[in-house]
Length: 282
Image: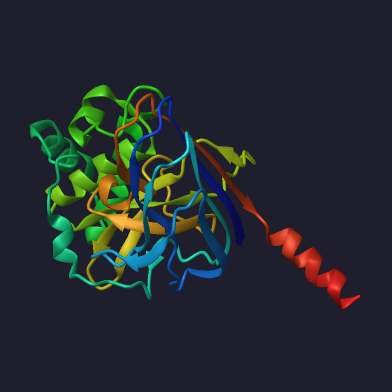
């Protein structure tokens, strides 16, 4: 699939801050399942973007903007060619051994309920670690209903299981926390999804999880949809939890009345690309 992404984050302030500092994890890396065709990140005003990478190998852009206007826009335009690898990630940059992703965080610390849930979800599962992870994904998908407006970015995995409702971020945190309980390294993934229902206009990026399977490697699991990622998924960044893979994360000095809005369009541009090639050959 050829996925085209248009992503825009807008900050509006009732009173302008003295300074804004941001770290952007908006740029995908290539691996065997995806090839970056074109990608551009922009920030308006006098912001200068500095490209780098974080400790986990995610591509980052950072900037500090002094005396910003009442409105700040960060935008992304890009295309990536993807192939279906049944969720298996090969050829990705891995600075650390898998065991690092057994580490708990404030958002993924398991309580007694998660420990019980994790073991119950995989009871009787066959097929080794991979079979247990598929059973866990099914359990998470059943335990938590997708529902917006119930949780926020501070909602923990324990909160999510208790509520029984959440968005893809919450569901991914629950999967990650549960996998670690089972002794399986797991991490949070942020990216984009071309939806099968044709809805291309979204209000947030997508999120899922990856777990490490011995003799196979990292494998993706989307608990929100109950499937392993296909070529409809575009992988952008990984982290121990949402905070380590957040598309936009930063702070400001001064100002007030901040309002943030996000618009995402992720579409399958494969047919357009094929048509364009056919026209160029005529």
